[in-house]
Amino acid sequence: MRRPLRPQPGSVLGGPLVHLDETASTNDRGRELALAGAPHGTVVVAERQTAGRGRQGRTWTAPPGRALTLSVLARTEAARMELLPLAVALAVCDACEKTAAVECMVKWPNDVWIDGRKVAGILIEARPQDGWAIIGIGLNVDTATEDFPAQLRDTATSLRIATGAAVDRNLGLKELCQGLSDWLAALREPDRVIDAFRARDALSGQRISWTQGGEGMSGQARGIDDTGALVVFTDGGTEVHLDAGEVHLQQRA
Ligand code: BTN
Image (tube, rainbow, N blue to C red):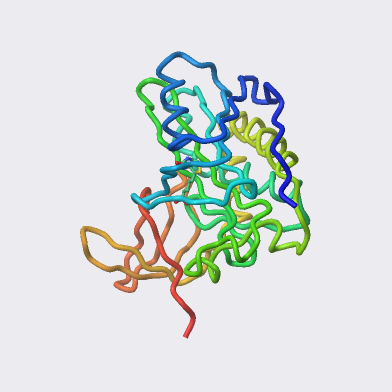
């Protein structure tokens, strides 16, 4: 049975909570609210997105009534935004673990994984010069295997699939807001964010590939540096620090 989402009018984040049946993208709605002067902690949650966006120009789809698709407006100084992607991933991990009996890891910079499958994606669209960022989160809470398109069934998961039991989206939403409140505050303590990320780093020691200037590269991930960049020892024998983009875990032979 699909459980309706019944968000409270406000959340622990301190801003209003806007609950929409349908919108193109909660990130777009969040951006409009940011430009109109909405306060820090404003949350936009939608039951259905008609043009949900993912990273790297991809789309993001989620079955209505099963997932959480939401965006949060964070007003914070530019200097604190460097570690925002990692802090948000940590917030999502904490929220998942408080909502269901799961253990989460993070694939740099901010895909949240359970047992090597993606349970949540994060799309941050920031305007550091204006002191705000829209944090978009898609979290597969109560999604069943058959709700995913066939091509995602081997790589995606949900809290429901991971535990084998129905999971309450209202609890997930409450814990997400709590997690974001905690980890946005932790941006004042960069070492805490870095240490917590290192404890959840799914790529450390793994062989990965990525593209740079159109060229395919591969190497071994060696954790993150103090700015949150991914440290990689390339097959060419050099150490590089990746601060943006996407890396892929190579299949074991
Ligand atoms: C990814 O590619 O992994 C990021 C996916 C982010 C999806 C969320 S759903 C809520 C918010 N609105 C969007 O259009 N995208 C983000």
